[in-house]
Image (cartoon, rainbow over all chains, first blue to last red; front, side, top):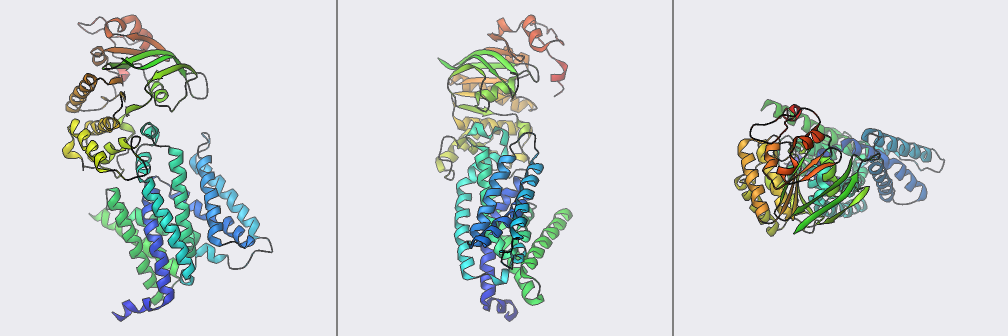
Amino acid sequence: MHALLHPWNETFMQLALGELVLLGVVGGIVGCWIVHYELAYSAESLAHALFPGLVGAALLGLPLLLGGAAGVAGAAAAVALVRRVPTLGADTAVAAVITSLFGLGVLLALTPATPPGLDALLFGDLLGVTRGDVLAAAMLAIAAGTALIVLHRPLLLVGFDRTTSRAFGARPLFVDLALLAVIAVAIVIGVRALGNLLVLALLVGPAATARLFASRMSSLMALAVALAVAASIAGLYLSYYASTAAGASVAVVMVGTYLAALAVRAAT
Amino acid sequence: MTLLHVDGVAAGYAGPPVLRDVTFEIAAGERVGVLGPNGGGKSTLFRVLLGELTPSAGTISGTRRFGYVPQTERSRLDYPVTALDVALMGTLWSSRWWLPVGKRDRERGFAALGRVGLREQADTMFGELSGGQRQRVLAARALVQDADVLLLDEPFSGVDVASGEMLTSLLDELASEGRGLLIATHDLEQAAGWDRVLCLNRRAVAFGVPEEVLTLDVLEQTYGGAIVTLPGKAAAILPPHHHDR
């Protein structure tokens, strides 16, 4: 029992868990839409698109969250709009936008004024999360959660049959933009903890795992959130006792859970 | 009472019109069949009426809100929705979309499913239903929309006999309630039993009561070759490729 409780006496572990729970709740729910809208690649690209926003914020002395949000929001809008060019496939549109933005970020990052420590923005600094980070993440989580509740019905309709959804009062472009914006917020919540290279583990992993067992959207979302939180706790234990990188540990546990679930599903 | 009047409408997709000179009307209580070959403009006409395409010529007057029953083949079977969830999608335009579905809307959804004989399957996953049952769920969704005019895109395509009979009865009921129905179909015999018929082949070849419209000359203009005369009918056509579906 002592071994189970001991890690949580540490403030940095409590803050890390708080940050991950917030990410798990938002990421678990939004992940269900990512999976069913087949946006995993777009979501990963959005995470990479944070880079120029973060660098830009660092150069301007603005909060990194603000820079990341601006970068992802810009990328989200660009991806959604470029996807509508009929002669350009969805994959090509995303690749063109993200490559351009990442190139811009590298260009900015190579200026002499860029502060050190940008690697933490790529891989996260889970055990370095501050109370301010958790508070900011909580505010973003409330905003994203509210948006997901408000958008639930249009999201369900457009995902079911995009081509006819306008006949039932939905606007697919608006729904796409809104969903990508919420994904962007979820990425911003998670980038401080897991970095933009690992944050997708808690956005796609839980929903992809839950989809193997749950058939209804409500149970799918509940299971995805539970899996995200459980993987976060297990990952933090692993990191604490095995002295492994915290963010990577959470990601590894989540991926391991998915693979185990796949095996169970295949065996039943 | 005329519910919808379409006059000289033309429409296309970033090029010359794929549909032109379309004139017809739907009166309250009328079942209007839309006949034509694949690519003849039936879907384009529906897209124009639904506001997805802007006509390049002509006018549309009357109601602009339609109940819509798309082809069931378009629906995703792996999507995590029940029959009731799908029926409730019909409430989006009449209620505040940003609020969760209310009790009253749920009752409307249950009632619509009951009307298509699927009240007991309300909690069944949409993808687990048979093709005919899925088509009836889509019809229930259109019922929930509670529109004066319903557009049905080949609602009998791929459905079993029981579902087909239930849909036929439903269409008759809806017409008797004073709703107008525009039904795209490949079934000439069925269309011959409806109130009026619109024959499309990139233009409106003919529009009127079946007895006047379904002539060999009109059908040849509509479908080209492959004309078959059915016993007991003035003229009819059953293009083989349409029966391969």
